[in-house]
Image (cartoon, rainbow, N blue to C red; front, side, top):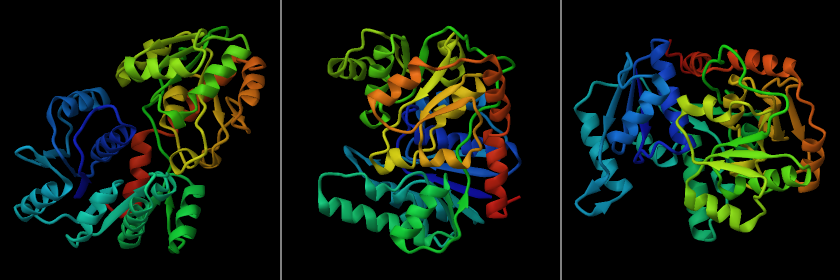
Length: 359
């Protein structure tokens, strides 16, 4: 039985929430009992579970919401007290799992052997405060050093963490994943380009917007909320862009139907960007979209075919050249779907369960 600890409130919007819930659902569906303990549940978590699993109930998956509030006060320490109190009422767990630094600290005090899954080098993202950055680096070092099993989403990330924190060469490399492919592609060869997901600065949307504008191509963006979109369009020329707010996973195929390719212009200038294994790659591929992506180190582990075009320089000039000359081929759509069939959450869960020895 696996205890998955996620000590944050659920919003239904964060990539780490998609990853956490998809992992828990997939492990449960291959028969591994999972208890997800999170800082609050509520409508957002139930809606997210319906979107990912198609139901609010998944066999072998238990969800335990624990508030991290005490009156008007909200903190990780309060959550920790409630978590340890709850844990004393339960039978023992053979394994624990987390992607969260504060969760790793809590798990280290329980004595339950845990798996820590790394998605980035947290300490490489500047916080503007050296003391805070030092604390974060020590939390990351401790989370990894205390873990019984270490997983990274790419070889490049594992190498960076191993070098930075003098860790053993024992990382399991398990990239991200996605839903099974659709029955047919939603792509259209003469359609516009699309970007789906967060519209945060490091996602590189300025490059995609400028590149499509210079290449005289159109772009659809599906992500963010109106205030975020206004901030983005204020700083760049978005005259060639169609925007709509984020949609649920189940609604994504309809939102991107008729496009020619999906874009991943992630900026590799921080730990978050450099070692990203973008989940939108898997979302695009399952819908039969060819992909144009920044040449991120994580992509080297994924055995991508000609359906994924890599842009080697994160510049407007390089993106313009690539988008202007982009060849959309029907065979690439089918190749993307076939690739997606081998990179589902359930196949990923089988690799994680094997790493843990849990099945």
